[in-house]
Length: 65
Image 1: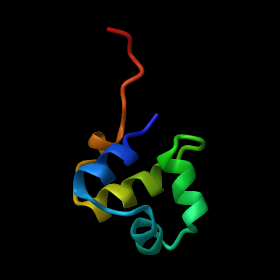
Image 2: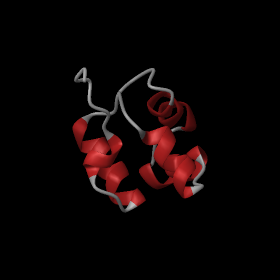
Image 3: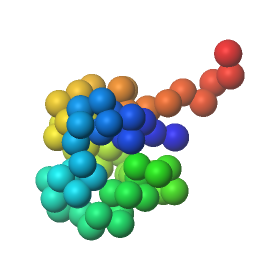
Image 4: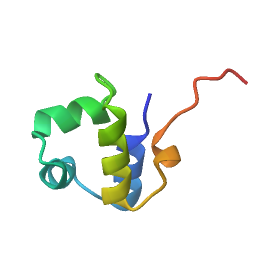
């Protein structure tokens, strides 16, 4: 699972803007945001770079507490 949706909301950034910066379709980015599909690691790093955050902030732990 990723936190792309939460980070976009925190930064008030639209999915269309991110899609444009990534050079990906809106549908592809929407799939990432809705967690229907997970971006490859290289894309995850690119998203973090575009959003100016550490890639770790885009990841949710799947460990049970």
